[in-house]
Image 1 (cartoon, rainbow, N blue to C red):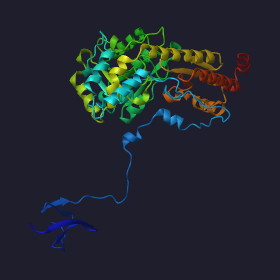
Image 2: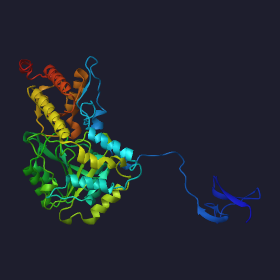
Image 3: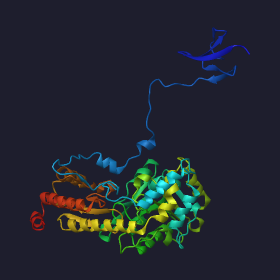
Image 4: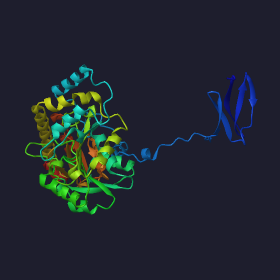
Length: 470
């Protein structure tokens, strides 16, 4: 074969090929014009169209990136949070039970992880939907006679957040709408809007312990409504729906043939004396994707282990939704393999005393917070029944120094070094959310500072505030 090769050169008149033969350059003007060039592949010459090139750099973020907005970050990042230097900061804003170190996970959970690591069996890629054994462990743990589960009904995910992401993605198309609780977890809107899905907010009623306004919810449904999201127990409210109320919600979904995305990450964090039924256990015809994970009950949110439980009533989902979830799970390579290796042991060997101790602590802290703030004029706390949160209403007429809940909570940081999340982040103005996982003495101190702050700024009932000071 001849010792000949070709290089492609650019010039102002287009692209041409240059032949190099025996070290000598032979220029040409292209083939039948100035917009074609040749490339050499294994000594053979092939014509190819010249590609246009940009004259300047212009790299832009995608529409999905531009449409992705976390309401919490949007509000908190705009706040001027400068704590009082004379008082240590008490953050009641972060839904992470591990922050203060007072709620460690159980030793059995840690041992399961150590055993999984030492086994050297889980260092590679797992199937995108999770190891069969791990999926079976979750299925066994959550299966009930009225809502049976097999391994094929479980998709393991990177935390409950990814489970919600996959569930919305498989059920909805751009231009569809979903029903979302208000107040509700901000991630639902973040995910939906980024996908071009509209969000319709159905109201929760504080005077009814945050039950759903069923008539208002049903009025939102139209032909483009693709699913309803139900969060039980609730973030941010800490409420737990009764069995009877859940049945009423399911009836609404049934009348309109709407699948339900049940966010049940807090399903096992329910205070004594209160029960929490899974939605799937109550449904006879409505298909349900139930999302959960290890984060809250086992106090390991950073381990990022979640799951979707597929409850396909009357084969409504059929094979297509399942296949869709499998395909979507293949976009990334699934949940952490080490955690999957430990999952069976975590679910089956964690002692019941660990759960009851955690729940007892959360209830005690909630009662302290509720009882203390109930006697502060201008504040209206709503006692929770589960999860890790308590919502507090603000009678803004009593606090004319502040424009809204964001202004109120910002000044609370400035003056008292107590940070509560303004409920505008949950589309519910003039409330704030308190996380009750802090140490008990810190909760007492925070409530005392909140009381002092409200007494200072309460204009409508200053005399009453002074009389109630204790």
